[in-house]
Image (cartoon, rainbow, N blue to C red; front, side):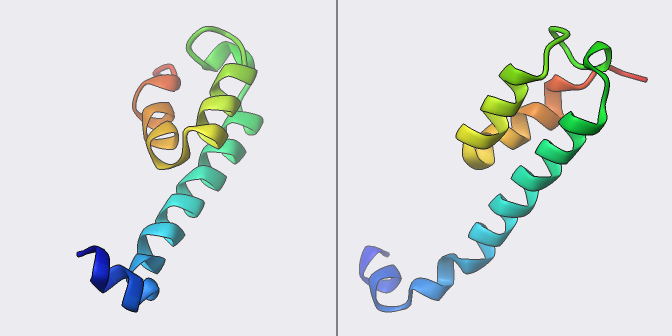
Length: 69
């Protein structure tokens, strides 16, 4: 598998596009919401998780970071 990825790095492109899209969507969603609609009531921990946590951070935010409306 490692040899395949070394020879053709474009195989990772769809995953990288998905990661970037989810991270951007998470950051935009966090910034548009009021802090009272986020678990914990603060934006900065969720922003840090979404930006620094890469794909997993954005998925965690969408799964548990938003309060039910």
